[in-house]
Length: 196
Image (tube, rainbow, N blue to C red; front, side, top):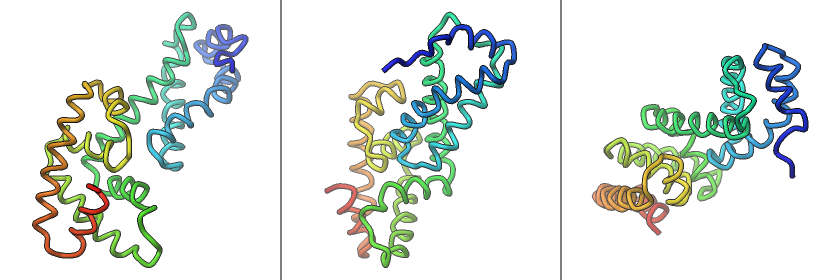
């Protein structure tokens, strides 16, 4: 499967000069690949679509800086990676975004009649996760809530797999203790789903 357009260098040279038609050809060639990567990272069609648009907005805003001699595919994927990392960092500061990510991650454990209980669980879990240090919270969110492997998170955040494992172990221990101190059924359900 060819990843490079036959006339990619010429198209990139034209785009660098502000040619919108060249940009459109490049967009339609690479957009499905970038979208697929973002969907795999985010597990959300809406978020993947939003970030896909941001990737190509960034490319167009910096079109004059594009170097046709360098791998454009790598350039695009780097932008997508950086935007995904920024999104996960923002998720640590945004309760609304955390709730969107939580819905995607735990939806398959629940049934329609349990929606209210799910929201209560998400609130309790968010409260517990918010008590973690920022980096540990990010690693836990990616590994436990998003289902990414330690190797994926290691590559995404630029830290060693052993550091990822250390964060997950410490976060899990903290959250297990935090939730075990809640005698209600919500805490028991969260313990079951997160640590089984």
